[in-house]
Image (cartoon, rainbow, N blue to C red; front, side, top):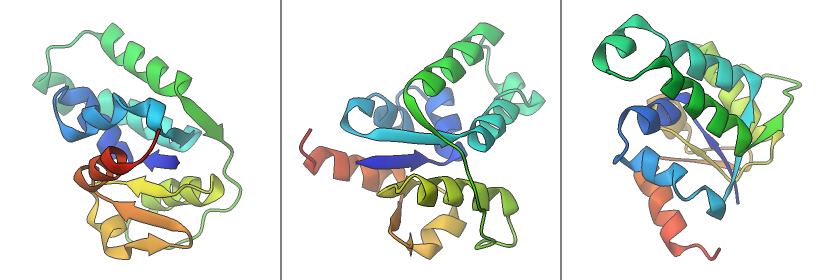
Amino acid sequence: MKVVLDTNVLVSAFLRSKGKPAQILSQDSKFELLICEGILAELTDVLNRPRIRRRETYLEHRVHEYLERVRASSIWLTIGEVENIIPHDPPDNLVLACAVEGNADYLVSGNKHFLDLKQHRHVKMVTPAQFLEILATSKT
């Protein structure tokens, strides 16, 4: 099973070690995580924002370790074409392009723009809770 985790899911997994997004990452042997440079760049940017830094008492090395873990456990994609499917939030188009380019089965997000789409081409949009249910019923 191939999966793209939206940046908001990756950020939540870092900030809340017991939340649903973190539970998803802890089961990464059950799926192939797809990522592109744009998603990793956005993740890096968000984790280094002052309001995130103020909320958490983590050290910079923890961010670095997390980013390295995501890099190492992911299949890297180069994105060719980025369609303008979500015109009011252009960065979302890159995440969607990553899912399409990688032939992902699921795009996991808490983002209403994705969830309202329900599906784009062959990619199903699901929440972290829905994806955990899918993982629970899938065969490894």
